[in-house]
Image (tube, rainbow, N blue to C red; front, side, top):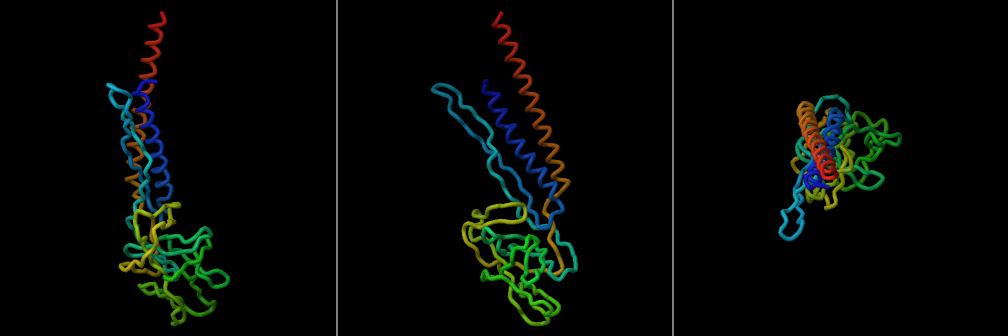
Length: 238
């Protein structure tokens, strides 16, 4: 196969992966706490042999999460919480501790503070938070201290990954830190608010159009190259 076709195919593969990310961002533009994801392209260079020019191809293997905050919308719910500033809520998933900014919490039948998935919300020390049924109105202070009927019950854990590069994206709203955790000193809790997605739908639609046009150009080039090679083979075969 001609080297130009190899290079174009690598580009087409990367554009397809990017299109999937853009489509997923658009689909989650209204998902609470969703973080947009992008794709980084790099150059892959291969030596063809002595005296031969090198072959350069596109490599789209690195996904990047946009951690910019989303807009906070008022809900009035006593257990709807948003984070102002950098930081994550600490929750306990079945596979281990997870980080999230989706603060649509509730209490289960036993009074445990849980996420929409039923995962316990943890305090700064990694212990589950408990709200006794019938204890009274629940209030959450800016530092995460949760009280019921005027009596403090605990403090919601607001944390940051000790190593930002060790933050692993699991899905659009939950993450794992492979490098330890540390307190998020500048973070504040807003009660009665939920943080929306940080996806800009207009920008993502523009990106989708850009990627689609780039893919169509690559497809057109492949079709012309295929026709050229066929013509060469037919001419040499006469």
